[in-house]
Length: 178
Image (cartoon, rainbow, N blue to C red; front, side, top):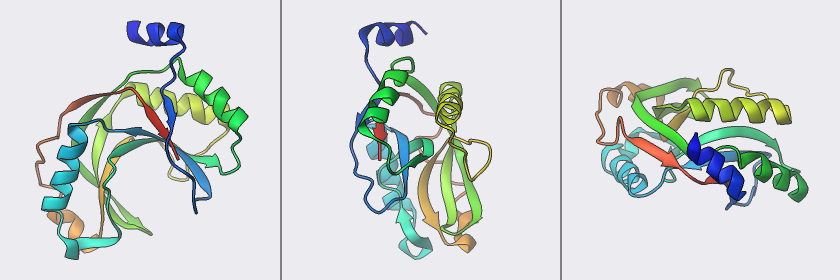
C-alpha cells in the first residue's frame, strides 16, 4: 500500500500505450509479465506444447494477464488520458501464478492457461468495469495467463504438467493498451 501512495503522489501511471488496435473491435488493457519470467514462460510453451496439438490461434508468445477486455474501439485520446490518471492509484500489481487449467468449449479451442491469484488485479478489474460500463461476455473475472490454444482433445495431456514458473510471484509495474 505504501508503494501505491508513493506512485500516486508522484503521478506515475501504470498504463503504457504499446499496440495498435488493428482489426480488433474492442480494446484491451493487459498486465505484461516482466523478464526474466516472460522468457521462461515462452521457452516452456515452445519446448513443451506440440505443434500438432495446437488450435488455429496457436501459442501465446506475449505472456500477459488481461486486466479488462471490451473497451470501445473508438476510445479517444482524452478518455485514455483520464484512464491514465485513474491508474495512478494502482500499482505495482502483485500476481501469483498458480496451477495449469483450461477453458473448454470456446470457439478458439481449449485455452491452456495458468491460474493467477491477485486481489489487486480483481479490484482493478471491478473498478474499471464499473467506471467505464464494461461487462465481460465470460461472466465473473478470472485472472489467468494464456499459454496456448489447443485442440480440445489435447487439453488433458497438458494439465498435469509442472512448468518451473508455477507459484512464481510477480510485480507488474506497467500495463499495456491494445
